Image (cartoon, rainbow, N blue to C red; front, top):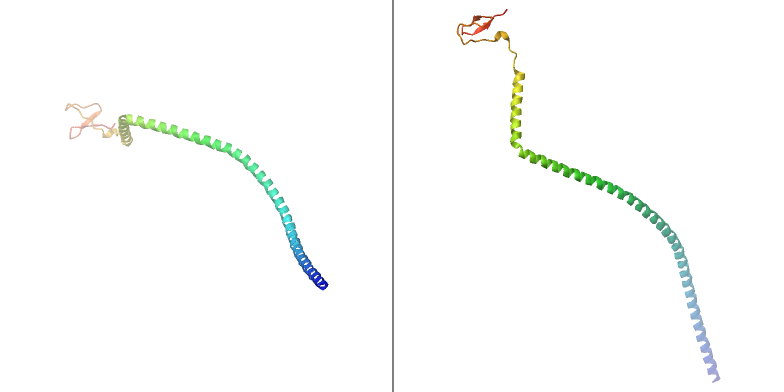
Length: 171
């Protein structure tokens, strides 16, 4: 039975050896995996530092742009207020012009008859002025004098025409 005891001890020792070798191989495999993970983490850490620097730079630029936009917005607000004032002035001017136009239109409707008369009289006056401009000067030699009395001769008249009209003598 002693032999059995030695065999059992030998089997236990071989089992223990297989267990140790298995654990060792697993640990070496885990060691390689952990080394790979450590390298990856180191790379990610380096990239995170770069990302952090870029993010900080972007935040700084964003803040400066936000301040610049805020300043320009305030300046534009004053421009918009000025433009609004101009627009209000134009609207006031338009309403004033509309009131004046309405007033003139009302007065024209009230005085249509008078305006028509003025237009008629002005047309008559223009016609008379045109006739006045178109008239020919009278040549005194062509003037014919008549008398209501048949045998009476006006002064400076000596001859009678055959129709009873007198002609002025040249002289």
